[in-house]
Length: 303
Image (cartoon, rainbow, N blue to C red):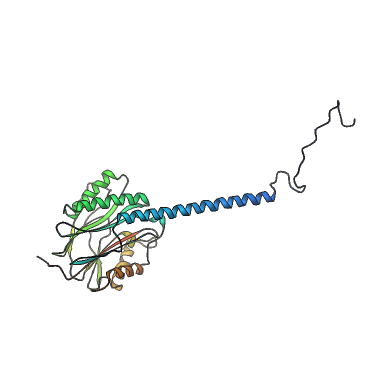
């Protein structure tokens, strides 16, 4: 038989069901389209999952902040002053940080005022912010001077919060004398609005919390007058990527005057809203706390 050697038929080559015009080793066009669609679908699902995860983290972060901080839109009316606060979240979820504020009456009749900022962003910064805020508020009930309070708070940061730094400004407002006594730890000094002008108070010495335990915290004071407005704030109000803190402070000083902040009889809450709008709205990269104290005519003054 032709083609048979030793009675054995040679094996036939395997059948090839590919298109005759297809280059050997090439993937059919239909398969490529299916694979591309699968990759796009997987990428879309991952993007959606990441978007949902970021949104959930922001929701949890804001909920935690709201549980820790006093209601930011609630004003406090006192016989001698009106206090208004604002917390403005960062525009980006990943930039939500550890800014905080406090305004609480002390047993001796003075008012304790504080604003602070923990380094970092996200849930870790907020957790540390909660510890510092509650610690400082508890320490304030001792009636100790603001410099001593920051010394104690600095010891807490150094010994209990590893790799953490924070800034703060705190003080006592005595309604009987209208004296504001304050200290700061690497924090922007308050702004005083008086009789149509605005200036930043000269800051006493004070380093960032968590930096060192060898330097003391100084104390300063200023006697406020009826009609004065004191503005305490975190650096998210004045610092932006497009400008430094000095330029931001100058902008705030001008806006405090042009928006009528501190004008006798003016709506303090509306004034803070106008101030925020005048400086460009919320900071996309950092949250912001503001605490404003408008001194009224009431309240006996003693020597």
